[in-house]
Length: 415
Image 1: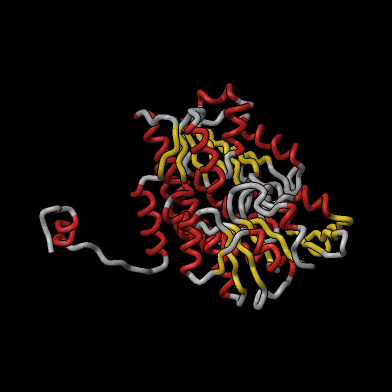
Image 2 (image 1 turned 120 degrees about the vertical axis):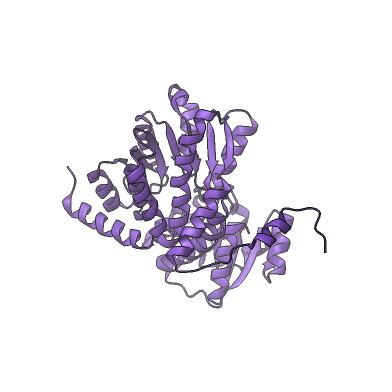
């Protein structure tokens, strides 16, 4: 039986988020009138937050039947889960569950036998292709929300393992520029400050990875007065960071100087035992990449002589043999969604609007024969989301004149 107090709290939280999500709210009203998803079964593996709840409500308004599991057990907001369940959405998520329960919840979401899947990290799609293959023939396609998931999906495509089309919502301009850069940047710093109450001004912040997320973290840290060091494996991104004034060096060198470390790469073992062994006393480790593999927590456990759990909320202190203390935030999981509340709702408004419109596009297009693979969100969807967001903010832009249109579409016109 649902706890009515949790339901009421969740409804308030969802209502607050919805205030900052005018684009998705407008799409929800349109979906309610047109019912483009009538009878569609959707299985989603996403962060169970208030912003996600607004997306779930939009899809339900369009006629979808939804089962939702969490893409991270530490990011689930239990009151939001309760409110969604009260609204008629099957929610399989609870904050702080162990790994076995996490995967059990994904299986329970798949029990709906979905026609469309929504994923954040590719765990649900992975299970479909390895453990629930009996459901594959019924899947029209799906959407992937994050960089890590896209990497996995492209590898599946390269190996001809992916059995249905997936839309790379993460790769839209509105997602990469705003969600990844501004959302991850602000919410990651928010999570670090909530967990540690540290002053970033004057500190050395090491950002591992200079994609859109890493840029956002680096910008916000520098804006608060930190000296920022960037580590990269991509020469072009490393050059970009250098030309923006950041100190660029390998992690082996940065490990000795950093006060705060943030991993934002989508890869594993970015901070390893040899790095941990030379870090300063009091070094803070935070992960803003998707999975809890970017920081080698097992190596940290092996180096530690003692571990003090919960010295502050979402902060564990590892004491090394020589007395140095290393602080690990959020168990190495997403610090912005565990120690803080994730991206601001105004940012998720764009990402989830693209997600909702991409689902409707998939339903329209799959009968015409989309092959298995990774697809970009149609440009018109991305532009529509941006235009709706500008309109909601009262911002106007110029339109091309007929002469400008002709010039852009003619190869004969010269200087």
